[in-house]
Image (cartoon, rainbow over all chains, first blue to last red; front, side, top):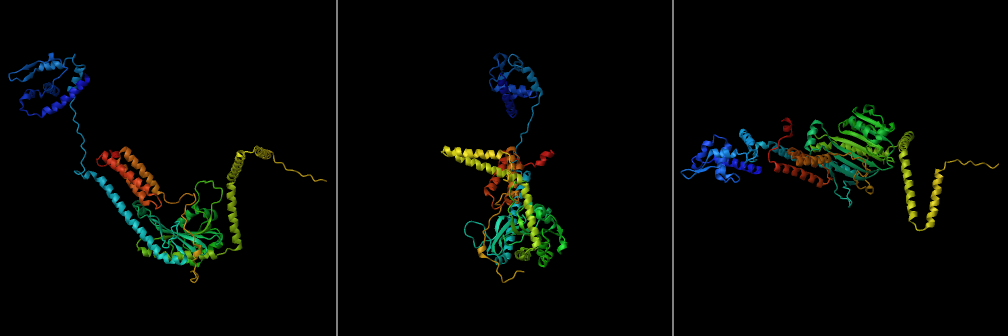
Length: 464
Length: 110
């Protein structure tokens, strides 16, 4: 019943909407015009009654009379009466009153803005797309500039490198060495070059770490915190080509970083001295293990270069105990990290305000310095006292390390022994011969008993 | 500086290039592409699930930054999938709701 009421109401509302737009002159509905001031519900009810045949309504309650024209006129009173009949409708009287009081709510449905009609409202999207376009344009230009810079550097230094190394540029691929090897691109701003085939050194790795010109975010952050293009050179010496010493001269900021982060400098060179002592500009700091080595390395030629190209030299690090950066967490290593004899150089390459060719040309004397240092290190010999001191230092470091890892090593050794026993046992168990098994078990038991027994010193009584 | 008459080159001493990072110590290199990749994926998922257009756009930007900073040795599939995910997040957001985007601070202000 209730459902039917709801359905009827929906139909009535829709019909009232339809009826309102009808021609006022339409005689069929002329009689209902005077009821427009009345409750809308009543009017629509009337219209509905005319159009449809209300079924469950009791026919007795409707007085339908015919007028002279043959039109059907529905008596008002009977109609009202009909709807006030409580027998017919349940709970109707109360709800009817409620409905009369409530005004029909008009909700304006949200019509989506059509894109073509209204560009302005999409300003944020347009901004985003523009940002993307700008990003990709910057990517293309930055990438090409970096590549151009790297290639210019290579072309300018190629002759010098080829004079010193047999192999200039190797990609490390398994097949035969490519003769025309050149720079290797690690990323859009990092390029490497491997050179090999020279006396006293295994090889030289040159890394061009350029500014991230291809990333717009990096470019913007570079405006706030400027960075420089850098050239990092790592020369790996032969194992017999270098005396044992650790030495480093670096600009202040790099010196702080290096003395804290690098394994060898932090262990062997606890002090940092200002460069003024050694006739080099004060913004350099010197960290050295052996004084003799310092004065040997910072000879007249090197100091001249350091004085002339102060801005271009970032660091010079010569070490026979180089093992990379300090491990931050305790890796539980049982052995000292592997050390290499290396010469490390870091040079800045300011590019602002000059052509790429000029920028790379200013680094050429520094590359010559690199080769000079290699030769120097090869020829340098420590005095006896210095050498003893150096060896003692290394021994001490090793002892400290061994002590600190003693517990861990003992545990590892015990684990290994246990493992060995287990394997042996398994092997014996797997054998078919019971005799052998028995014999092995006896042996094992004897071994255990011996271990558990307190260690007593055997006193030998001399026979008188 | 170097005596010019001695040729330092030794063809018999040539060693092939071995890429570093053979040992297990922490890579000192830049981790930006990895972080941006993850961030991009997180924003894409947010944009897809919560139908936030600005999330989807930020995801696309993160993918672009990751691409620009990536190394040559990195897997291109990773970068491509990140791009595809962010583009799909944008497309889905606009298909479901063609309204123009409201900036995130607008909801905070209102």
